Image 1 (cartoon, rainbow, N blue to C red):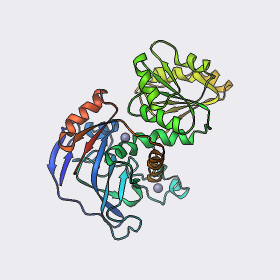
Image 2 (cartoon, rainbow, N blue to C red):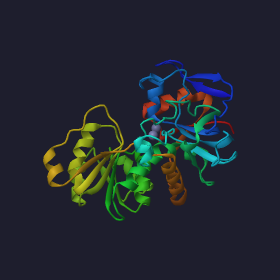
Image 3 (cartoon, protein in one colour):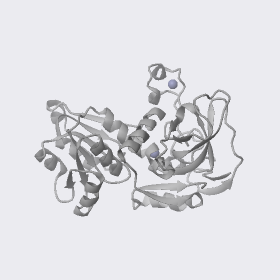
Image 4 (cartoon, helix red, strand yellow):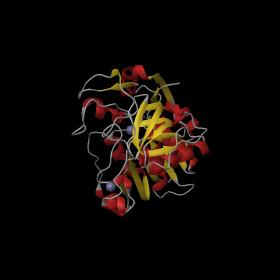
Length: 336
Ligand SMILES: [Zn+2]
Ligand SMILES: [Zn+2]
């Protein structure tokens, strides 16, 4: 099979031929149709994950079809359309697993960190890490939903807001453009926060009821004028502007952090206490959460905006992702 690998920390993307891998007893072999490029692929490219073994095939936004299954796999059949995301499997035995909190598994496997990912024609995944893809969702649009999509959908649906509540999405990029769509489709009064008046038409097109230009006004003040936000989904990895958003929350509101900047967040404790505020992070979810994300997207028409590249051009595609110019997710199309 054709694959793209990194053979040492900081190494280049190498297009290589590899034997097609065989699935183990509880594993599924997937013929990959598309694989999204996520900013977290930097961890593999630059060797930022302690103990990562090379060579490694990156990619944890995978969509494809089941091609072969191991002897103990009963829930998946060849031909089924499936995806794999960041969460690459769990042990079923540790304390969090016994409590059903599989994402917190102490022995959690991460796709493309602990085993090879989707920059390849085939990949192997543990059966519990696989999610079904609805028929009407094209492979290239399903791929980014396996990481970017599930992250913003899963946090928005679990954060306690109800229909009609004011929910703001900060940042109109890879995560934010999906967050705006999900917030709208979940029934929230959706406010997009971006930099520059020129982004307003896109924000409205994605479903935002209101747009706040952070270049010309303080987003926190603007949110308070609208009554204060029940939730603010912070996607742009800029800790300073994220911290300032806390002032835009209503009583009992939550700042949901999914964009990771290098700087610490800095918030004043008094409003946290007096307004009973919460700052919460969110990682993504399990295969079942992915399946929910895909089904909800199929039901409501939420789709990522993508730029497509063939597998052989992975290096170029990765550079486009890093440049921040991509609108908004970069996807490798593989096979047909
Ligand atoms: Zn990712
Ligand atoms: Zn476990």
